[in-house]
Amino acid sequence: MKAFLTVIGKDKVGIVAAISDELFKLNVNIVDITQTIMDDFFTMVVMVDLEKSPKSFDEIKKALKERGEAIGVEAKIQREEIFNKMHRI
Image (cartoon, rainbow, N blue to C red; front, side, top):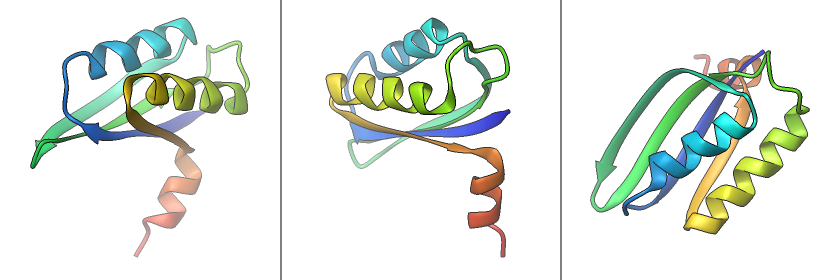
């Protein structure tokens, strides 16, 4: 299953490292990634593949949320099919 991870927060050193480290620990593969700084705010959207992770979607969601909070950013993950339905015109 693929999913979209969004990360938003005040820009600082280590955000990409912390989030990618958590994905590594969860055995979640990064398929595509984009990031930008908007008026001192870091924004990142990551497409991930959850297929090889031994964790459930809810466990992954919780781990990413907690890691985000620990570094002062908001990290949210959505299943690809939900994301696509929400953003279809």
